[in-house]
Image (cartoon, rainbow, N blue to C red):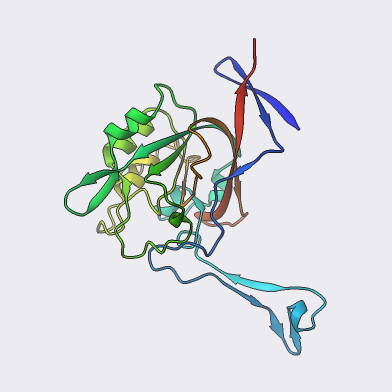
Length: 254
């Protein structure tokens, strides 16, 4: 099944039978010392919700932390007292998305960041509403890491300011957070992205914007423009486990 879509007066086709899943299975990675994902059969009296244990169906309870157990999408409710729901803030699920690979830069003695210089070098002059960042190096070990206490890479404040100025509304990256693991609760990049500052009234201009963290983009997937389908679990929470799917775009002849 192919669809035809247009962006900036250019027409593209996308083959919906060839999805590229860039999510990580829940429970394979973790960060911020989140507890492990737990999946246990429901128990009530003699009933145990497992076919292996004699039940007619599998009927499991699941315990997880969206921010700490795998690929997730979050809204501004992650940093606001109101704790807005990502399921209510995200109203459009298909986006034109630019995939770029960015080399990490050292900062100080122990940190590595996505710097403004390297980000600008990787990005085209005009960006679509969604940007997907694959950091380099890109080992498959990213699929099974426990980032807790490791001071993983993050996004420089100047880089985040640049993305906001470029009109990026949906940011996806293969790191556990856009901010430093331990930053005394400042969360500068988060606040810049959603235009949320202490004592400043929320403008409502970026309430629909999202950040998706802990994705994995295989090296076989080339940099370029894609159709993104950002799938969420319908949780009434600031963040939800998510499954971003990419579709390769081909420019059609005019």
